[in-house]
Length: 99
View (cartoon, rainbow, N blue to C red):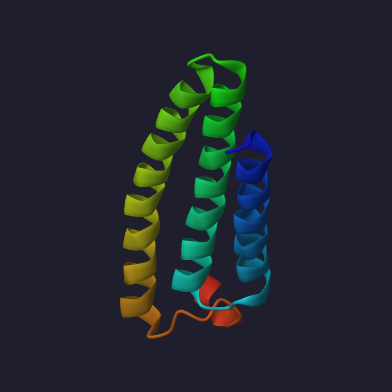
């Protein structure tokens, strides 16, 4: 399979994630769209590493996965805490930022 197809799929995944972040107002859906965007970057890095024949892209993929896992832990903890404190996950509610 040609490398260009990987880049096309990655661009489509990133676009879907970006549209999801911009249009959706639920914090969990936005969080999932950000994860989709990170995975599309991983696909691009892995495809580039395959194209150039070096391990650099795969090392970057590993670090992105580690950062995404840490972000998932902290992000989900914040989302659960926000839901229990306020009772909603709608990011358009301006009172969510006040104490």
